[in-house]
Image (cartoon, rainbow, N blue to C red; front, side):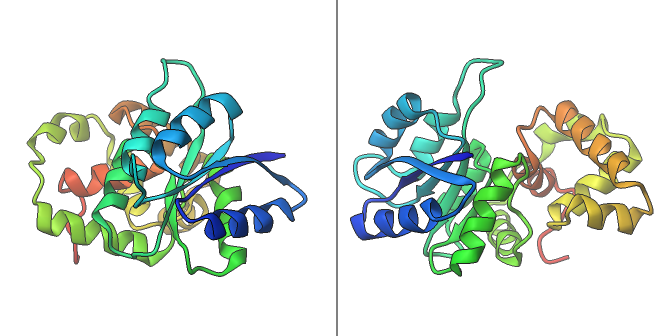
Length: 222
């Protein structure tokens, strides 16, 4: 069973999402919270596998809560955070991805998409396929113009093939799509992904996408 916690400052939203997820045979809702501060406390007590995290909330927003929840001792297991937002271009969401969130989903997305998102991040993958994710990161980096010099040494540690894989991850490609593009076995792609994440000291594919843009490996709009 996938243990889920729902965090949103609107009671009707929390109850609606909780009811939808609880109806799934492989998902159980272990609790909820109305703001980020309560979410931090509840996550430590309830130990969920996945947290649906609203972005804009009183007391503590979803970005700050995500940072605190994912700040666990080395070797400890942290929950996966799936950001909920009503905005398809939101600076808070980009910040949450940098903090280690595993992806995001729009609140007005079809119910089947929300359930799928929970299952995807629970399995250890990042939810990056929707084109809106690439739009969001491209828009943010275009405006932010991050200094990519601090990433140059880390980027140089990758092999040419790992660099190719990173580019395709940043384009929102799944392992299967990357394998087809590079004419590799899917297991080989998984190995490349694991190695590049280790070399770059990144938590998951979501942070790999952010790194690819911030390093200049992928240029927004190209």
